Amino acid sequence: MVERVCENCRWWDAGPTGNGYCQRRAPISVEDLWPITGKGSSCGDWQDKDVTPEQEDRQELTRRFAVAIMGTGWAANCPEGQVWAVAASLAAAEPQIQRENEQ
Image 1 (tube, helix red, strand yellow):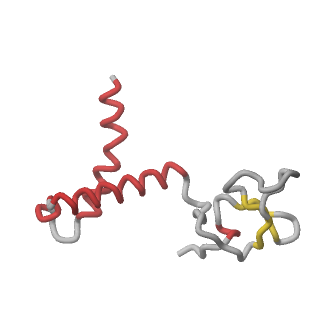
Image 2 (cartoon, rainbow, N blue to C red; image 1 turned 90 degrees about the vertical axis):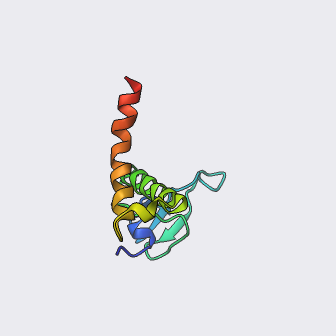
C-alpha cells in the first residue's frame, strides 16, 4: 500500500529543496503562492499519483454498484463473496452501455 504522504500524492509538485507545492486547490495568497508542504506531510485530500482520474472514477462506480447491490438485497443472489466482482463487471460494462444509448 502506498504511504499517504505528499510525495506520493497526485496534487503535489516537488520543489528543489525537498519541500513542494500542494496544487489541490487554488493558490492561497495575493502573490498566487501554492501552499508549501514537506514530502512527508499529509492531508485529507491525498490521492495516489499512480491512479489516473479514469481509474478513480471506475473505482467509485464499482463502490456505488456494490452499495446498490447490498442495499437492494440482490446480494443474496450473488455467489458468496462475489458482490465486488459483480459490481466491478457492472462498472466495466457502463461505458459500453452509455455508447450504445448515444447511438
